[in-house]
Image 1 (cartoon, rainbow, N blue to C red):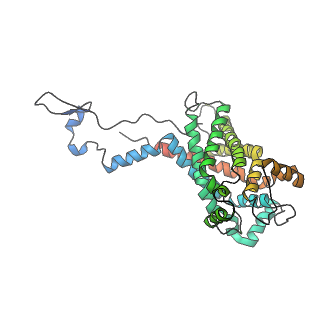
Image 2 (tube, rainbow, N blue to C red):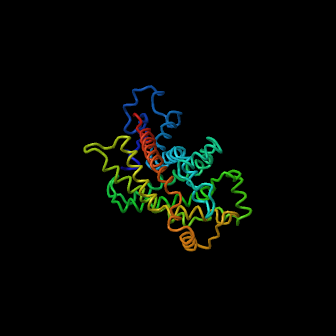
Amino acid sequence: MSLGSPRGGESTAMGETSKPPQGGMAVSAGASSNLTKPADALPSLSGPKSRVIRLRQTVARPVMAAFIAGGIAGAVSRTVVSPLERLKILFQVQSVGRQEYKLSVGKGLAKMWTEEGWRGLMRGNGTNCIRIVPYSAVQFGSYNFYKKFVETAPGEMTPLRRLLCGGAAGITSVSASFAVLSDINKAKLPGMWATVINMYKTEGGVFALYRGIIPTVAGVAPYVGLNFMTYEAVRKYVTPEGEKNPSAVRKLLAGAISGAVAQTCTYPFDVLRRRFQINTMSGLGYKYKSIWDAVKLIVAQEGVRGMYKGIIPNLLKVAPSMASSWLSFEVTRDMLVGLGKVDA
């Protein structure tokens, strides 16, 4: 699957004006047939219609279409799984000895519903969408950009090249949006902007906003690479022979499988990222000096299972999250690419 369908070359509506013999009439090169049309019927590059056409052709470019569709896909997927995302974070940041959310997934969701209602299930989703839209847009857009340099033919790449392009896209998206990504979706915090200001003032300035970026990059690069590589492979496998694209249900299946594989392989990095983001907050019991110190302490105090805290609700959210993300991405991208097919 090519994340952005190639377009044909763009044609201009105006030609060079050639100078006729003296006393003659100026004729537009290659456009003599237009002389029989009234003046107001000739195409105008400065008219409103032309500006609309230019806009459509701009958003139809593969990288731009992938960028816009990626942002929309991120917002859709995060909203679909908002309750499970919040429950996962509550599991991850709960320290040893605390029992508030030492529950099954069902009981944890029921606890949130009983204590906070539907607002509790969706708490942090607005902040999540604000942070995920630019992150997802940059990720899909940059993947589409990088793959142009390694494709052997339009849409043709080896699995290793897909993995590398996906990894590069993951690093690009994290680097571009990490200050926004470092918000903490926790009920007792006062909101995104107040939290950012508080972190800046009390936890070390700008560096506090980028705390945990190393384990984040270490986790996101292989995750995104695996996600793109697996999706492309599964998508190709589930596409019926002789057809160009699979059905919507098959795309959902490919997205669910790719997300599950990528998340399972890289989940410990996500736990480390969350722990480092709250490393200096009082009352949570975490004081890590380095990544390796964090790994040793987590394994010593909580066992290997500590590196996979919250993975069950995470895997339960991966299927609808990645399935809806890939499907909404493809639908939106194909619609945007189609806008560039302007009738002459």
